[in-house]
Length: 44
Image 1 (cartoon, one colour):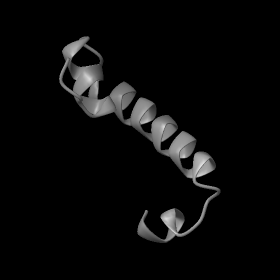
Image 2 (cartoon, helix red, strand yellow):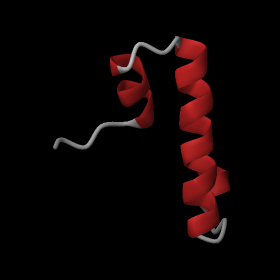
Image 3 (tube, one colour):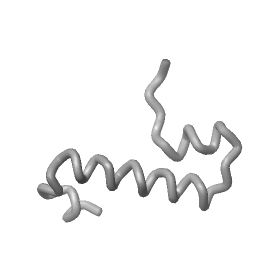
């Protein structure tokens, strides 16, 4: 039940680094949308 980053989860599932990066990017996009895109894109 420990919280892990999407990339760590992907690696534990045996995904390639490229797949993990794609999954993580998708997760970040989702977080940006939930936050209304306020200020988060500046940190990317």
